[in-house]
Each structure stands twice: as structure tokens, then as C-alpha cells.
Amino acid sequence: MLLLKLWNYIRGYVIISLKGFFVEKFINICIHRHILLWDVKRLKDGSFTLKISIKGFKLLRPVARKTKCKVKILEKRGIPFIIHRYRKRRVFLAGILIFIVLFNLLTSFIWGVEVKGNENIPAELILEKLAANRIKPGVIKYGIDTDRLVNRLMVEIKELAWIGIYIRGTKVKVEVKERVAPRAIVPKDQFCNVVAYRDGIIKSIIVRTGEPAVKVGDTVTRGQVLISGRVSSKNQEVPERLVHASGTVIARTWYEAGCPVETRVNEKARTGRVTSRYRLKLFTKEITLFGKKVEYENYDRVTEYRGLSIGKNLALPFGLAVDRFYENIIIGKELSLDEAKKLATEEANRKASARIPEGAVIVDRSMNFSESDDGKLIANVVIECFEDIGVEEGIGE
Image (cartoon, rainbow, N blue to C red; front, side):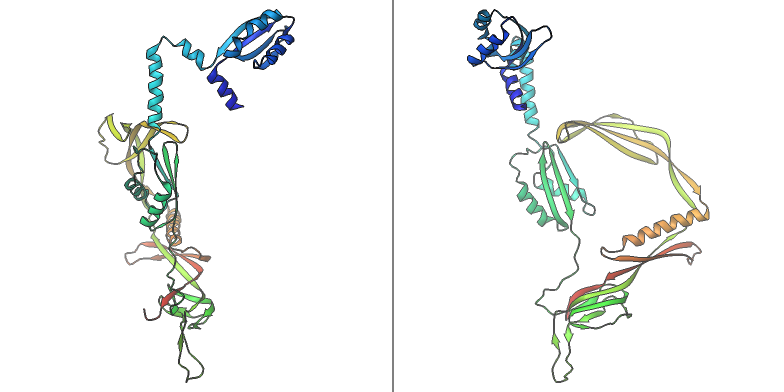
């Protein structure tokens, strides 16, 4: 339906009113002569309104004369009428033509690159690699082989587990998934031990291949053999054999962190004074327009960019950036001992939690306060976990 309306608008059509005693006969004759009519509506006064193409309207005079019906044009719609209306305004038509050409030219380039999904990999690194492969603002978007580019970036950035590159309008949208570093794995055809990658107390041990070197309840240290790849025989005359040891060793582990308790903290507060600078973006260049010099000793910088775009994906290479500098003053604030302890405990808990590897199960948290050598009060947080501490290590390494 939408395509039909668009086609009629391109060809042009007129809306007419039809009055007379033989309107039905008028319509039947039009149908018989293959004159297309649509949107036929009957009004309260007995007249009709309908739409007809320009070509069909030119064929109506003999039909109207034969049926003695009166035809009146109510409205003219479509591109042919627009062109006819402005046919003498050559500058105007030339301007429209130039606009269409420039618009198509501008939308043939990339004007924005967005990166999503990265946490540890800097966005600047991904943008740098993309730029080295012709993906940057100002580059024509046609002919870009995204599949080839994906394969190249997977090789160049080892930390990537997956990357997707999509061209949407004048934007390139990049979605990434970062690789989780696996533990070292020794090839199956090589002999190895299972050793502890950190200290802990053995909670359970399941041996699939090899010989257990520890038992439940043992305290182990980093690098200690947990499952040996050297399997001995009860028969002393039979020499030991080497195997690829494997299994699961769950241990109790602890992660600790401390934070000093500070009853006096410094906080930033804005004074209300602000200085603004304006930058105009034209294609890939930026031009500083005007703005005062920043004379504040301490400030926060907030940048707002207002770019021209049509929809979400059709960005245009024009925009205005506003840098606002808000003056700050540093204010010393006194906290009660309980408030200071709470803040220090939260920070210590955050630090300890950040060290816990993926897959570990937290079973307990404990907190205490101690005094350092210089007399400061320290908040200590200890998080107890259950985790698999076994990693493979080649025999003889």
C-alpha cells in the first residue's frame, strides 16, 4: 500500500468532485474504458470525491459530457505539479538538485565510530586498529569488507573473544566481547602434574588421571603438586610410569584487603563559577570558535557534543562541542568514627572482591579493625571462597 501511494505521488494525481444524476454511470464508463479511479467517497449532499491520475483526468471530458456530470478539481498532488509550480524558479530547482547531490555524497562516508562491550580493552586501542584498517571518520564506506576486517582484528588484538563490525547509515558500530584468560593447559599427549596456583586448604579432590599427592584437610601452597603425573606401582620391580594428570581440587581460599580509617576527608564542591569554550566540528577538523581562558586551579571539565543527524544511524559531519569548566574548592569534612569505619570497610570489601576469580564461590565474609605501626586504624576484610585451585604443569618444567 505504501509503495502504491508513493508511485501515485511520483506520477501525480488530482482529487476531483463529481456531481450529477448519473454518477454511477460515469464510474461504470470509466471502469469500462480502463480509467483508474480510487478512494471514491460519497458525501452527504449526494456528490462524490475521488482520486484519478493525470492521464486519466485528461480522458474524463467525453465521459462527463455523455453522463451530464459536473467535474471540479479540488486538489492537485504529486511531483509533476511541484515541478510545474517552480519551473521558472531555476535557482530554487538548482538548489534542490545540489542539496540532493551533496546529501547523497555526505551519506557515502563514515562520520562516526561507536565501540561497545569493552571493559578491559581500551576503546582507544580498538579505534586505533580500526583507523589503521581504513575505518575512521571521513572514509568512504563503500567497498569495506567487514568480514576480512573482523578476522584481522581478532589476530591483532589477542584479548578479543569476539568482535562484530556493522555499517549503519554513516556510522560504524563495533561490538566486542573480551577473552577470559584460560588457565594453562598442557596438551593431552604430554605428561604433567596438577599443581596449586594459590594457597589454600583442600576441601575435596577428585582424581581422573594420576596419583593424589595431598588429602582433604591439607594446607597447600602455590606451586605444590596436588595430583602427580608420576604413578608408582605396588610392585617395586615395576618402574613408575608417567601420565597426563587431571582432576578437580577444591580448596578453601581467602582474599584480604585493608583500608585506613580516615575521620577527615576532602570533598570537592562547585563554587558556581563556570567557563565555556566552543568548538565547531567540520568533517574531520575542529575549529575553536571562542571562549575564555580557564583560570581555575581546580575544576571539572564537562564536554557536550551536539552533532547533526537524521535518525540514530545517519550522522552528518557537522556539530558543535561545548566544553564547560566548573570551578571546585576542596573542603575538609570531619566524619564520626562510625562513618569513617563504614566507608573504610566498604572500600576494603571492594578491593578484596575485585581479586576473586570467576568461578569461585563466596562462603563467608569477615571484618575486623587493627592498628598499624604508625598508630592508624585499619579496616580489614577477609572473604572466604571455595574454588578449583588446580592447574596443569608439564613434568620437568
